[in-house]
Structure formats: structure tokens, C-alpha cells
Image (tube, rainbow, N blue to C red; front, side, top):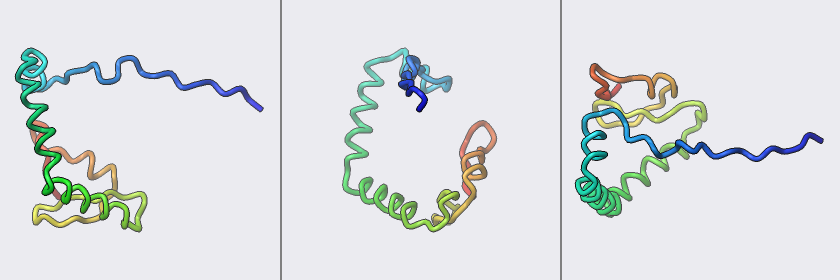
Length: 99
């Protein structure tokens, strides 16, 4: 039986601040980042956001096509779409576009 080698942790994981204007701004302004993180924590803990996430998780869990993602349409519906197509669709300037 081959010897198991433990996985090494990526030392750079979580160290990058990103390349966007906002990422650079928050990297340079720790107080602003702290304020933003506090807002996001409160926002994502709200009952409305929890219900929204639960609905998305349920849709993915009930998805019979394991190799497909759920994609948001312009009309607000969720439809099955190949992962590669869903995740690769970016509009001009890196702005996400919906199916």
C-alpha cells in the first residue's frame, strides 16, 4: 500500500487583495474595510438573506442534473445550465450578465 502524503496548505491562500478598484481601496483603508465587513455580516445574517440562500441551496440540492449549475435568468427564474457556460459568462468589463 502506498504511503499517504499529507496535503500541504497553500500559504498564499487568503493573502491576495484583488485587482479591482474597490479591492485596492479596501486594502489601503482598513477602517473602511472593517466598516464594510460589519455591514456585510449584518446584511447576510438577516432573515431575508437566509431565506434567499436556503432557496438557492434547495434548488441545487433538488437538481437532478448533477453536472449542471443553476443559472439566474433575466426574468429572475432559475434554470439548469452547464457549469462551464454559467461560470464563464461575463459581460464587457467583467460585469456579470444573466442568461
